[in-house]
Image (cartoon, rainbow, N blue to C red; front, top):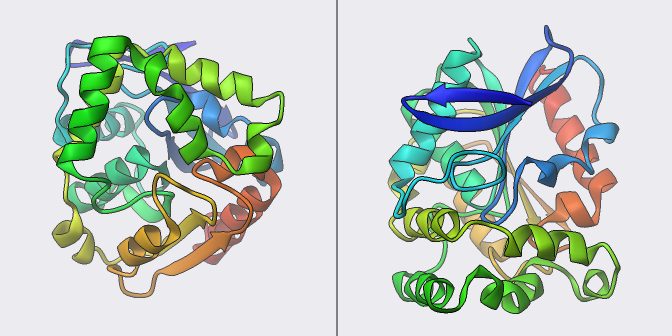
Length: 262
């Protein structure tokens, strides 16, 4: 277990693979921790330095009082990479993780060699939707949002699989301040202009059954970046790295090779 003390906020992080390998930073979604990426790791090529961390308010990281700003979430990622002396990482971000990845690339291009924007958008949802979710969580607890969230996250076949319980439990155990804090960060973010200014290799990944960030949103977002590529994974929802890890890892491996990361 490794802890980074970033200006008094302690973030839990983990490094797998080759300590001297090309760096890949994974940034997970709202309501999950770094275990989100466990299913794909066995399917990735050797020779990579695989860096994962729990966002503030999630997993084993500190949980400061809400709300959080997107700039704060971006700074956490920035400071973690600086602490680890990482440059030119391939950054894989899913959902709010993809927003953090966009902000990181716009702020510190020296840290980011290429982007994978998975199941995300330059802007996600509306202020009213996030107001409702934050209010419901504060009134009834994060678990009150679990049914609707699972239906948005996963395809219908996956909803009947036993392992759904793992992801539901992870979501329900997200601290209230972490959930509402990151929700506020998403609510206040519109990255259309900074993302349109990016010039770096970018892969967009969407799930055909994603009720949280539909394919058209992902396609529109990565389309802001000249030369980007978009891939649709069929029969998968908001977390395709969980539902179809081999397919997801194959897309990621292909992009790693295209960008010279392996």
